[in-house]
Image (tube, rainbow, N blue to C red):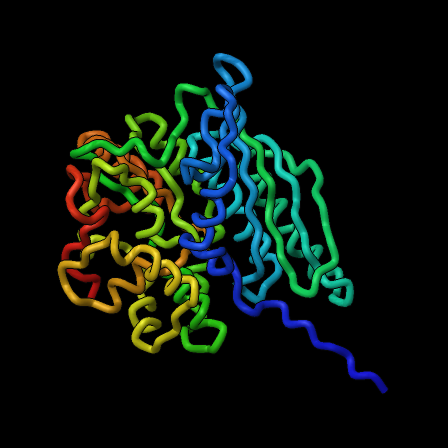
Length: 346
């Protein structure tokens, strides 16, 4: 009698499954650049989504994101994967219009699981104010899910990630540590409430934070995902700027330091470290601080660069509306490193 193969739903995924920034950059630099005056943002700028101008007052924002499960609950996985994909539209200052499902699914697995994934994703698209318009599925050995999303933005109001100016304050709209928490949860090393806290954050849309910061002078914006806080921050800093981060202001999930101390680490965090360590200076020796800042985030928050006065008002408005927000650093004139981290998290 032939033994039936057991398919494991969650082996570890989310944005920890992304290719490392070093490998990806080596591939992309060999691809010819597209010359089109209406392509306002392309892959050559390391931005969150592509932006294409279709008229003087309308541009299309396009993005695509999918990954394997990082939680056991298929419905929650669908919500998180959808929120993560939708986030790229918000990081560009756009509004979600349509979305298409991207599905890889084993034929041998219970289709009710697929139904729960799609239901979770559909509900997040609805919350975003968009329309789920279809999708594409293929048979695969492992589950993967995400969205291709189309949004709109005014061509003069795009949030790019590299327009930071000296004196800007850096705001972060979600705590760090999702990679650490999910990794530890798979081996039973964090309490259920710690995972629930991380899941709630990952499933939350960045829509509301994005809508608030549009009322202010945003110089740079990105969402923090697989390259970790430091990876995406380094992308924001041009050759003429350095970010000074105050580690004692960094928000993180309370179980994250213990995850580091128990060595519940990810290979993706190590890839981030290998690629970034020559660009980052830590003023104090703290393995916990480094690992949390290198940790790959799934559906992380927005990282926003605004003038000091605007940052104070935006942070206050977000907190008044129950949206998480923390000022974590400032933008300075370029120094030897792209990022300087002062202090430590614990």
